[in-house]
Image 1: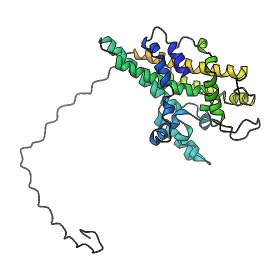
Image 2: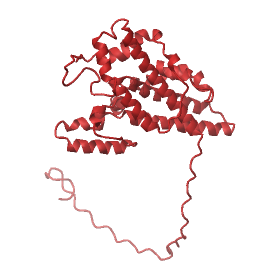
Image 3: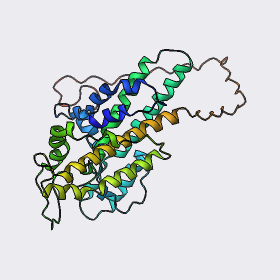
Image 4: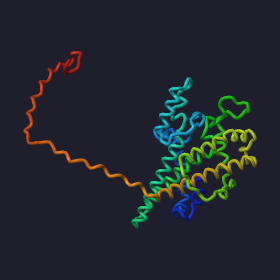
Length: 315
């Protein structure tokens, strides 16, 4: 919520004013995807669970991720087929889909901004599309905020697995301790708004977001080191508090950059579609020939009496 609210309050004057005015709604809607994760709503939870993470270790050796989710699926299935052990670790739902849902929402937001511009030019009401924009902006903020937490980028998402020479915690508590308990308790004293700079345009949103993910992944071990040093216990240590402020600021800044990019790009005229090539008209078939009469249907097979031990009709 804090990442969304801070981004909304820093919307520049060059963007529509209603976004800043909607800051509380955008903040409220930030956790919406987590509200879709109750076990009682199985289909909803099951379908969007992989949207919240990406285990970058599973993608070692891949220089560049494809921009489309289905190309990404094919890449993972190829890795799964080539795996000599634990092939299911490479299933898309195991590796995570985080960058794909994020970019898809970004493009939804860009489309909505484009519609807003059109309605403004036509002097029509923009109330409906403003509501869409606020929702997309908030929804986008959830996933951008997820990645500000390095533990959303790794197989080490909630307790260290594998070789552990530094004796990091293996308990399944560190994720919420870092992201939830500590932040929720101290958010009013974790001011980071002054760190937000004017937004910049993302020339390649997908690649820029992948860089943002990799930057966060590089901090995974730092989270565990701070946890060992009691950085998130009680009021935390100065280093622990500084680390969380920096991650909240990184998330809010990236989100604001996404919004600004969607707004700027929505003003670029769409390419004109090429009209289909004209083809000669095809003469319709001659329908004056009388139809050939149909043959009478064959007689139905006799009906066997009940109790014959076979189907009621036929052999």
